[in-house]
Amino acid sequence: MIGAGHVATHLSKALQKAGIKVLQVYSRTAKAAASLAAELNCEYTIKPTDINPNADLYLFSVTDNALPNVLSNFPYKGVFAAHTSGSHSIQLLTDAGFRSGVFYPLQTFSKSIEPVFSTIPLCIEASDQNGLESLSQLASTISNDVRHVTSSQREIIHIAAVFSCNFTNHMYAVAEDLMAKNNIDFDILYPLLDETIRKAKKSRPALVQTGPAARNDQNIIEKHLNQLATLPDYQKLYNFISESIQSQSGK
Amino acid sequence: MIGAGHVATHLSKALQKAGIKVLQVYSRTAKAAASLAAELNCEYTIKPTDINPNADLYLFSVTDNALPNVLSNFPYKGVFAAHTSGSHSIQLLTDAGFRSGVFYPLQTFSKSIEPVFSTIPLCIEASDQNGLESLSQLASTISNDVRHVTSSQREIIHIAAVFSCNFTNHMYAVAEDLMAKNNIDFDILYPLLDETIRKAKKSRPALVQTGPAARNDQNIIEKHLNQLATLPDYQKLYNFISESIQSQSGK
Image (tube, rainbow over all chains, first blue to last red):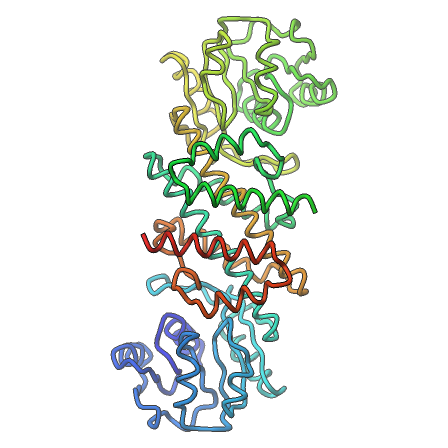
């Protein structure tokens, strides 16, 4: 396991629990490497030259920014390697001289929250058919949702994930802040949040769009914009997204 | 029951099921009035002057735009009336000469999807204490979550609902459209959507914000903007919301 962050930690624990032996942890940070190795009861190193040469697979699970540098310091060529990134192409590993693959768990990971891997989609890709079969078998040991996804599809999925996870959470954050500023508990919105996601799953989200913008209720939109006058960031956001909804529904 | 749309239908059916007798349905649309009255096994009328004068409560559940007009044609003064609107003030009813109240179910209603009322927050308000107790008792017959909410708080809740329901759904719609354009099933994102909402409930959403904007990863942001070059609406939305996230996290 190359890396010892959130994804590396959750992933290597899940793999080992499923009977896959993690030989060794490499990280540039001794503390992180030691901590994960202790959890896995395996060796660790912070020196690239001490990385065990006998692994069946080298799994690179480091931040997108760090990956090129970690690859350039890796001592072996021709071995089988996969990365766990949503945005890097498989080509990055191929160009670095590996038999290459991708092993991307499509989920948001937090240190303190234990993920349920069985439901997490694992997007796999490989430079050859043997590699694809190996990654597929490996993925199946921890997830019931293994999908062959190309690098260009994975790029789209990553952008879609930004919209539906990161941007959605920002909408929640604005709503929660508005409520907090007026001493109203955010939890009053929970049933609405749940119903919104339930409806989006039952149909195409664009077909179940509701609210002032979708029904072109300019009175309510103007009223809301006026009420947000003291919060210009939120006012602009309200206006911009309302216009985007109106422009989409007009198509 | 004054009105026969989605909210009026679901609400009056839930109330009658809980043992509250709906005397009569009024709607300007004969077909809608007849249809709901048949479901409730009660009378209906389309003439304001034929509205039954003996109701304990007149519940106005019509669209925000229609409410002022429906009120001006109502034949009785001094009776107890409540509306179900998220955005209209209680004052609208008081000014129309009623003992007034608000009975606002905080949920998005669709014709074909049966709501579970027990979990829907009912926001009540009244112009006098007796009215508040009556509405509280009535609300408790169908929901386990009855809250006293003032008109000014309800306005904030309504704006927050636009952000966390309507705008969130628009983010889903963009994601789904991007996926569809590239022949990828939207359902691969479901576990991510579920986890996003779970994390937002466990903490303040702003504190669990993740993604390229939150970590100021300008490389990924630029890459995504380039990939959205052929979809300028989505590109602008991506850029605008990313900047909003960055401006919030900088505070």
